[in-house]
Amino acid sequence: MKPTVYLETTIVSYLVAAPTRDIIQSAHQQATREWWTRRDRFDLYVSGPVLAEARRGDAIAAARRLDALAGLPILSVDRGARTLANTLLRVGALPTKARLDAVHVAIAAVNGMDYLLTWNLRHLANAAIRGKIEEACRRAGIQPPNICTPEELMEV
Image: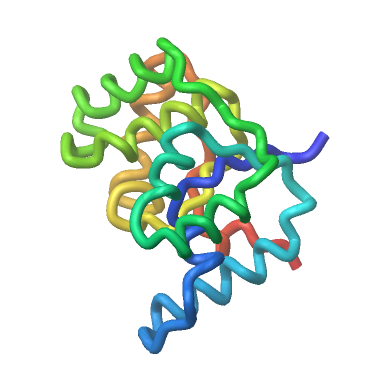
């Protein structure tokens, strides 16, 4: 059985984005594209909120994002995910302005994903916050996903 990966929207955004001169964003794009070529080592999943975010913005870019995600299984936002997302916000694991990030974590956790792959370094792949998220999930009786970037999930 392959490890399971929930793809948060920033992954597909970096995957299909036009090249940039910003050195950090360029590095993220390159790491994402490299990881994507090896994605067959994992079972990938998305959710309705990921697809909704992917549809936003420039129509051509949105079409590229949706094409990249086409055919991936879609995890639902059920009652358990909504409850866990609210818990993550209520206990301060994530700030209230990060409601959608809490939803992504909750969907991944409730569905037993091994990894939540993201470039959201502010609220998700952040050492200061990750521990709070993990603790809140465990206190709710749910195993948290390993929140990481493509660079962290790269195998040699």
